[in-house]
Length: 266
Image (cartoon, rainbow, N blue to C red; front, side):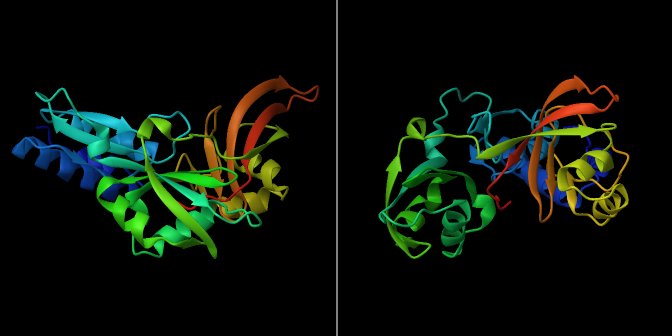
């Protein structure tokens, strides 16, 4: 196996580095003992850093879920000689039905109630909220804890059923499509347009550690962004650079932005 000491030093975000190391330890264990294991649910940035390390072992991996809008995924690590991996052995889907006809529940209602059972956030994947129910991805060994321990969500009575992974109602989080004009693709200019504050104040927000790009802390106001980047601004929400629509007559860049309207807990 390659020496990844310098590789870890290349990862500047300490939280990301810790998660990558944990996945590396699981990969080593899976390889040494020829067993199959699943990791915590992590974001795409952690996965991208982990894959070169996983590939240095004599093991294979699968990502689940593979839905394009999934923010949190688990890596299933398994011996290279094993070709019949069943994701349902590691990952389970639950449907939490809201029995109240009068009060809708949101993402934070469901997540907060699940975590109140003593379950760590890293053991739960994405939660797909619909009008009368939510589909939850979780580690298989926690499914019964949730199914039998969760009786209410946001003071609403609920009932819970296990569903086939293929029956999960995946959905992109709710968003409002915005159009902004910016003088450049610098982070401070885009933050300025998104939160309608001065460029100096936007730069201060960035330097204070309140902004992440693709789940990684970014404190450089001069950082250049591109289509597809996800901007998280504390107290303001998440914004996806969805499309570039050319330039205005004054030369500013026209951007379409998806503003995800319901706060998601990491």
